Length: 172
Image 1: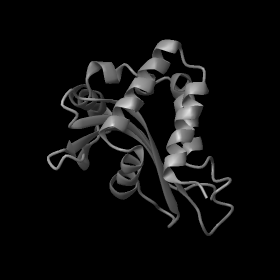
Image 2 (image 1 turned 135 degrees about the horizontal axis):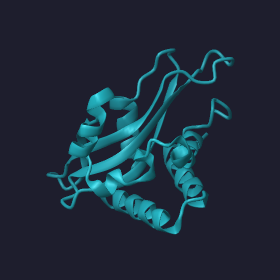
Image 3 (image 1 turned 90 degrees about the horizontal axis):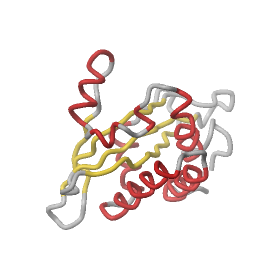
Image 4 (image 1 turned 120 degrees about the vertical axis):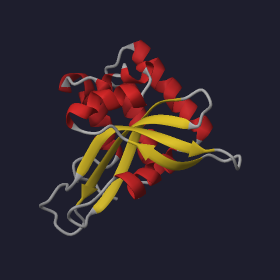
């Protein structure tokens, strides 16, 4: 049975093996290491399952994410969230609802341990770009996942999809 931490490590391993340029690989590795210093990736994935992802067919919800960075005070982390619903009762349905979008996670660190308190997500449509500019610093927005070209982000989506269990196959 695959543990959530295995999914994140699988995602990072697949991501670093993919065809990124070395500068982007370094930036992704730095963001992942920074996140690990703040809170465990499994905490982020659990928050995504509980507060962001959704189901429409009563299936199993799985989430993973790509760390994109943090603010200097480490009270905000930026992630690209990916959640997918997998059918547990109907093998002909490979997946149900899903999402893939950027999030700003707000942390409370007052107790000495970081806890995710809330999140912000850019609105859809004409408000998306202004919200992205308001919510995410330029260095985060320069990541390829913010690029509208499907070819530019395919590697990341494929990695995230494998991290949550593929396209409904090999479910634990």
